[in-house]
Length: 468
Image (cartoon, rainbow, N blue to C red):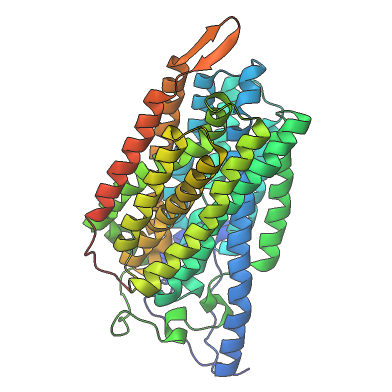
């Protein structure tokens, strides 16, 4: 195969002292040098077609499967409370530890992901999060659980920015909404597997199986990601994806002379990024409220078994798969890659679903409808506010940093939710003749208010400019 001399541009890593320092810091995780770009157009086309399928499988199925290692605690809360291992308030502390470390990790790992070899970094961090889950099966001390679950959050935090960096490297501007929508189904895949498979394991074998099962899944996932994933196209001698597709917003942008770090810091000057941070944070309050406390609510307020509660939430996650893909298609095709109109549409669906879940009659068909609307609406919003919109308005070479900035706010919101929800539920819990009774009223209004605030914030970005 013939090669041409490759001229570095703004899409590629800068040479010099900063690059050397970052490579030393990242060590094993650092990406290799870019190869000269191949002159054989047919070979380039064939390579892109082959690798794009593998990349999408790796980041979607891999992230979906590793999600079970993050949500396991939500499934085992009632067994842990009933067994007297942890109280709701203590579980709030443990759950929030993951969200705080995940928030910090989303920022740091988002910045590192722009420099790292994505294949190596995702495989190793997936393996480490699996080991944390296996360890949790043996832990009954509150503070040891806080430590291990917190470490789990930090390792988990590389998954989203790593996946988005891979996706923006292999999929161009006007197909990104659809690609991001497909990738966002990973959230629903992971949630569905957690509520159904992990919930069934807990019902059969006890709370420890709720950690052992995800741990084994995580080990297999790390191996699969190592086999399927590739680093950026330039490291394989391929041109940048926007050049290959001829897909730019207006004219092809000139090379950015600034270092990658300077480009990363520049996104902090974009006001829209900060509004997105707050909108995503309030969205994640509601998202993780249902993930973390939904099983307990359905068991205690609606009277369903663990298996039935898990099944109902799985319906929401299946609807979320449809919602994520639909959001990408609608925003790309119907709204010409503009996300705000789709944000409003999916936000309304999510609110209607919540009202049916919490205030509708105790009817399985209506509850199922509420789960479908909530799942589709929420996952569409997570697709946009949790990353896609930020990637649209930030330079693509620093997509990981954009995800990291959004991510730290998102998961601080999720962590605060865990604290506040645990406190409100604990205060509303009473014992009558040895039986626990719960008052979920205050916490439900907290969750709904967060969704309304998110919708209002997102609507202020109606005319935000997109960047190549």
